Length: 113
Image (cartoon, rainbow, N blue to C red; front, side, top):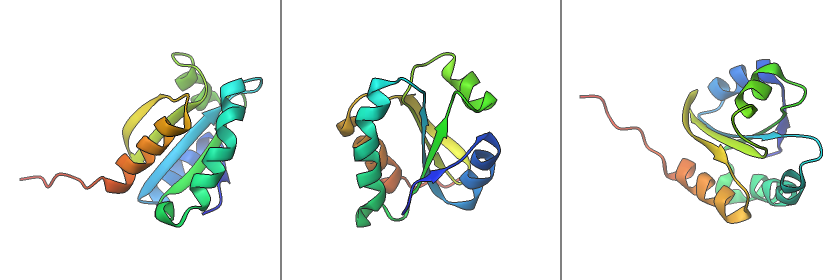
């Protein structure tokens, strides 16, 4: 799947349009953001992750994203299942991003009894 560049409004819509979503919040002059850009694109193209929508937001251009980033540093990743946030954290390595993707890929909701 191609990476979807979006904004705050698009994020709110897309996390409901796709069952499984990973969002990467980036910032200008962020060395780690640049370092993780190629692996993020590689993962988006891999057949194993085709059931996941890959989103990218510039936190400097989006007020909601910027507010999320006030407490963390870029690159900040969030994984969603059917619009619900599962995990969020600053990730600094390709292995950490892959672990998030595997977690999302393998996620199955717990049935409500």
